[in-house]
Length: 336
Picture 1 (tube, rainbow, N blue to C red):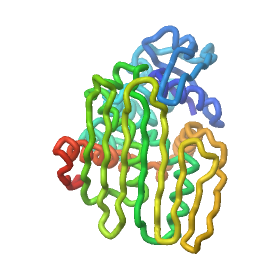
Picture 2 (picture 1 turned 30 degrees about the vertical axis):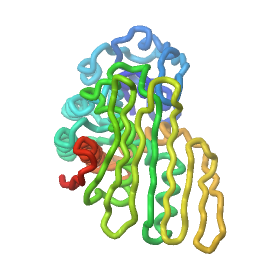
Picture 3 (picture 1 turned 180 degrees about the horizontal axis):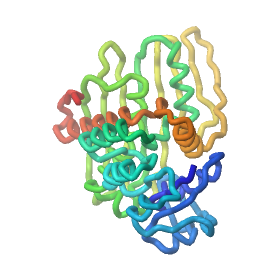
């Protein structure tokens, strides 16, 4: 399979590097308007996980300056879209119409309406569409999913994700292009909750937004009938110095599971008073995500582990959360 990566910002650079670890895949083309990046110099790129600091060999890689040129490239089988969020759905639709398989970075779209149109197009295109909801490939979260299958009814769940405002990117700081800090960050946790329990019945959210000061915070309570509270919280906490982190604490009838960002193990605290440490494999989650997408393309199999329908639902859920925050914590029904 031959892949073109569109966009060489933090995520595009990450994907360009990770594709080298996927067997049977060639990075055939890249697209950027930045000549320095097209030359393979990605050392100046920053993101919420730090500086990529890489020099990549693009000597044998076709360089495109526009998305349209990349979509028209006959030597490309699949498009990996790492462009600003406001371009995700339109470029993904154009790629499917051009006969390409599509991996599109999260979120799949800025609105549920656009996401739904894209999902319907993919279903009739005969091509594979997958959103880059990389949390589904994280060892800690994957293990949590497995452990919860035998842990009994959920009593409480807490998911948090936070970082500094993106001083490295002007488009991310524009809510019309990125959806805002809470939307861009917490869609990971919204998507993961959907993967476990589906769409909640309703949501209540509070928080504060002042993007000029680098603050966009939300605290959301997702209501699932017959289950304990599910809390999703976090966002941007001022520019530059605030470190990235994520974590969860999930309590079910039989045990409580806990993992903080960077920990090499997931802790389990059982009902009978015993405990256990589950050592997590050292995994490049982006390479795992890309490898799964490539395998789906290779076998013409829709991505059951990361279905685009649920990626679209995650967009809707984040919009419901932001609506509730704007309405000062009023309960919002999650009806789509």
